[in-house]
Image (cartoon, rainbow, N blue to C red; front, side, top):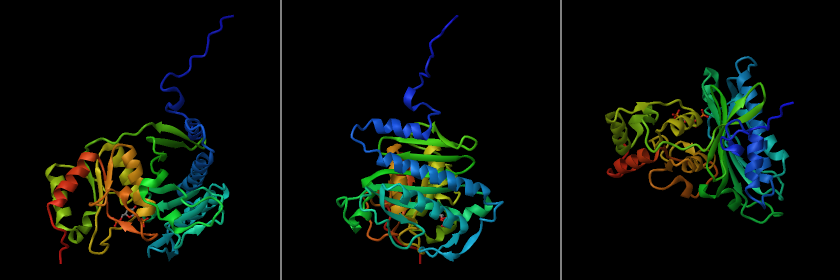
Length: 345
Ligand code: AFP
């Protein structure tokens, strides 16, 4: 009888394409001999909730769960039914495991204190971003940031546990419910993307060690708001046109960001007359994407400072966001700094 030894896949072994998310998380945890496994469990909990939201999203057209819920959230935005469902799913997943002490959600007015003083982590989450796109079958996403609490375990949470700058994130990620569903995350050691295989119910590593192109050919901004921008932003957009960059804007932050991260590009949501501090939320939108961007070699700024250096003052704080390929953001800063800020009257 002929016996031949098994030849394992030599393509990077442990982290090769096709590794399941669970296995990847376990292998990464082994890199830290004193890791307790709580962050790993938290990431698994988030992945499970993402699978459930993915299922609900796919059924939205059939099951009458598209459309408005009939209430507005704390931002004054109309809540979609799936916003509410996604919020419930993530709240449940984050509260069951015991790793989390508090949650900040786009859909909740106040911080949710889980009354779990032994929980090490605080999570800030936008459970379903871009939800006004659900009814028209366009990609939507979930965005999350994870922080280690600052106050000692065993004590009630304090505002310093919640209001942390983005540079203190221990992990961040997003789920893109698109033509396929992807989970992309970082724990501060590079960015990895996992694609969901519906029939197997698993996320598999599909985009190891994502590196953003240093320069790209896409600019993403809501040009319908041009009359509300500062002159300096208009000058940059004119520069994009001079360069013949392609204009691409979905109106789902996760989808716009993901495309630009992989292909190279710049996403801009500037201050406008209606939203002088920008529209996007610092704690559960900008910070997570900025952490991922920087880990992938891209850049994120509010036009003055790095997003990750901003200290939040209020829970649902907004910020201008300019994020994307390094050289494009550099050009943005060069061009916009030549102008004094002045809103058109
Ligand atoms: P919704 O979740 O209310 O659809 O908000 C989406 C969002 O926060 C972000 O995903 C988009 O990039 C941005 O708003 C689009 O805003 P404009 O419609 O003002 O361009």
